Length: 305
Ligand SMILES: [Zn+2]
Image 1: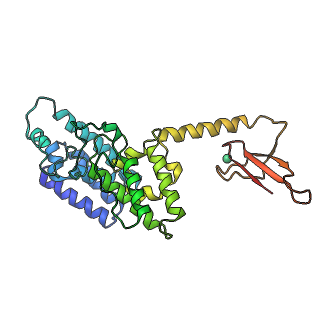
Image 2 (image 1 turned 135 degrees about the horizontal axis):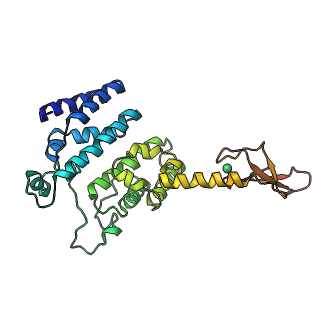
């Protein structure tokens, strides 16, 4: 398949996505690309086929996204085997040119806007970048709360991101904040602030890879704005949580003498019915007892009377 054919396929892929054509339509094109394209950096760049297929990795149809992932992996291998160090191909020259923002270093990724990278001569440790070291003008709205959130979002996203340009991070920070803002009818009241707080905490958490998934574009700003907290955890973390619940489930099969376990109470957090409870008179004697509940599986505690 030559560059012209590949370009035609890219056009058809874009048409398929735009017009929401059936998954089979995309699968046929992807199948042909997989079979007939041996990728070079030049070809990927000229035809933009790398970007087009890369986008399909996030396609809601699983067969499409899986095939797209396969192709991206294969092409990365193709490209890698061709660019041996020491070769003086056109590709290499192009790689060194930073004049045009359309010549990003990775043909699989959308072109990144040109922007300040941490200056290697400056005194700032690249691992300690923030809105001040990157000289970001973050107060861009007329609302001080929003401005503070945009600034804080920049700091959360740029943490340890050594390679990302400040423009890229700032664009993301603005997009995340504006998505959260438009999702909340009550402007910057509690729900907005709580949501932003949850995002800051999870983005800064070094135990999940949420931040790099956002910076790489795997998770869009719109998606992040409404994402469940449980989905923000890394796969590894989710597995650990599952293991803890499974272990507790096993432990809780053992008879417990002192606590009563009810199968009538449902845990509000994990939804399982293995809740132990004790009762106490916390107020005056003519008022009902207070029941203290503990979920034996996830440890969630609550009370009611
Ligand atoms: Zn529970």
